[in-house]
Image (tube, rainbow, N blue to C red; front, side):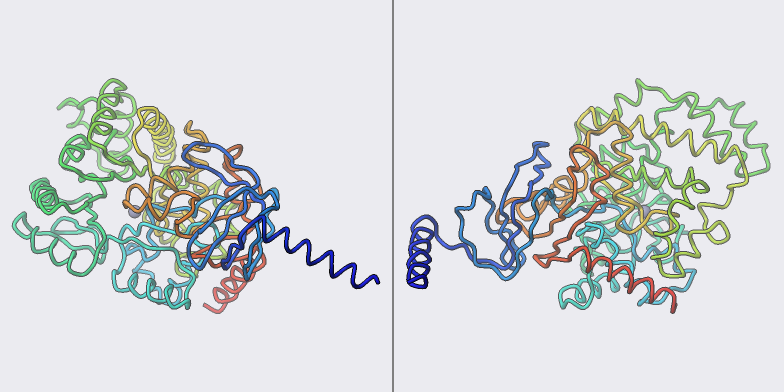
Length: 484
Ligand SMILES: [Zn+2]
């Protein structure tokens, strides 16, 4: 009697269920999660998000009426879903660090650290293009957990380049050959560098514009940021040369006085101090208007400036993160080896760095108010304490400290990078038909940006990496680092 009743009940329930909904099939179902809409700065509560392989195929209210058939269920009640983050200025193979003789396997270990911290895409801003191609292949064949990589290949610098591995362009008439050969090798954009002579830069920008090829990078020493903007540099990095353009011109007498100083660092302190004192808000304002009018992106790498300025007090806080790095990079992030930490015993030098940082914060705040498009970038690589993965969380915090809302900060690492690369149909928001690069957070990042660091799982190309797996990956990296 009892059994027949039960069978009858089950059959009728099934009939009701089938009448109500069609069955949705996929690989992964994220159940009852709060979806973060980064564009509108809002939360869409209690959603079911269905993935199939590497795609989001359905998002709908978790009201119990849907019927899913999936391989994996992710219970996510009370959690928050954001798009995978992008680090738009990273150097996992920084040429500046080649002098430490890292081997390829050590460099490989940096890549998973991006992903387990929710950074599923990076813009590689100088590194060995062959190594980057190898990483892409390894990621495709699942032998390396790595973010999606857009890469510029070698830096384009002047005849005596600043770093190993750069292409030194000797004269303007070499520009076409250099650019053509890099495009041939498969770079995604060109990165210009500080020592590029003015005439060569102008020839390069002219040619890149002719063939409609994006170029980004350091505004060269010989080109003001306004001119870089007018000549179409798509993104400017680190806020370089803005201070110089917006400060007063030092008088001949002052320059002569500085010129007589013997110590190079004393000289640079003196000129920076002069520029900081004479920084002109009105000039800056019209420069920002020009950036806006010319649709120029900015990647300020605030956290890099911060870690450089407050290295001594930051290092002890970051020790656990430093342990995750391969030995060559750990060594390079110490004053003994690091070019950026050479003058830390000069109190004026340290103080100037800290004053510069405060000005950079104001610049970013104003630029954001003007609607200039910002990109989150860490400069991860040679610069000390710019960590793979966590560095991006630091950058978002730095944006909020500078006056952006958490949603504005989040955009710099989600929708903005997608718009920058013109891949917004596939990346940048949590929406159906987009690639399933996602991060599940344990708290609401629109209320507190630090929640981007409280990760429950990361989803890369539809593959769920759970909190336990993340811990295992970090453990295995620590073990390898101990071996070498
Ligand atoms: Zn860089």
